[in-house]
Amino acid sequence: MEGPPNGKGGRRRSNRAPPPRTTFTRAGNVERQKAQCDGRTVGSDPGDDHGGARGRGWRDGRWRACDERSFIPDEATLRLGRAIGAGPIRVLGGMAPIAPGQALLLGASRPGYVCALFANGLEARAGWVPQGRIAPAALSVDPAPPLAAWVGTWRQYDNKIVLTRAGDRLSAKGEAYWPGKSIMPANDGEFSGTATPSGRRLHFAADPCLVNLILAGEFLFVDDNRMCGGHNAAFSGIFIRRPERPR
Image (tube, rainbow, N blue to C red; front, side):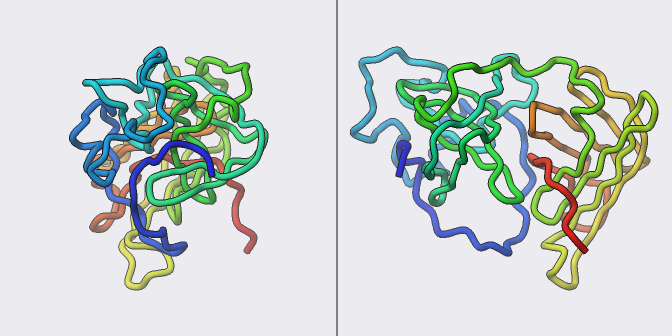
C-alpha cells in the first residue's frame, strides 16, 4: 500500500451512477479540497518531509489534496509520464492499481510524490504516486497533437465519445446517460458533428448543444453547456480511451 492518505470514504460501487458535473478549476482552493478529506490536511501524515523542497503541491502552509479536480487541462506545467513497478496507490475513497508502463498525467509535486492522473477501468483516477513509481523521462504535453492522437473511443462510465478522422477534420458522436445506461428509466443525451482541432482544443456546436474537448496525452477533458440531452445527462469530466465493448 503506497502513497500518503488522501482522505476517507466508502468503497466505490462497480455499477454506480456517473459523478456530478466536474468543473476544471485550480486545485488551490484549500477549503474545497479539505471537504473531500476527513478534516485532515493531506500533508499531515508522519511520512511527510516538511524540511524538503516544496513543489506546487504546497500552498497556504499545507499540502493540497490530489484528486481528479486537481488537473487543469490546459495548464502548461502538465507532463506525460509512465508508471514503473506494480502495486496499488491510495486514492480518495480507497486504493487503485497502477500497472508498469501505464500512461500518467503528472501535475503538482511534493517531496517524494507526484500528483498523477491515470486510467482505472472506465474512469480516470488521481492520487499521490511515489516518485520511484514514475519513469525518470517525462515529456511535456503536445500543444498541437496530430489528428491520430484524437481518434478512438473515449469512455467515462457509460458515457462515450467516438472520434474518427474525416479528411483533415474530426467527426464526433457522443452519448451520455443519467443515472446510468442500465438503470431504467434513464435520461440520455447525444451530440454529433465535425470540427477541426485548434491546438489541444476541439469544439462541437449543434444548437443548442455545445461540447468542448481538451486533449492531454491519453486523457480527454470534456465539458458541455448542459443542453445536450435529458436531465443530468451531460458530457462533463475526464474520458479515457477504451475500445468498443464486444456485442
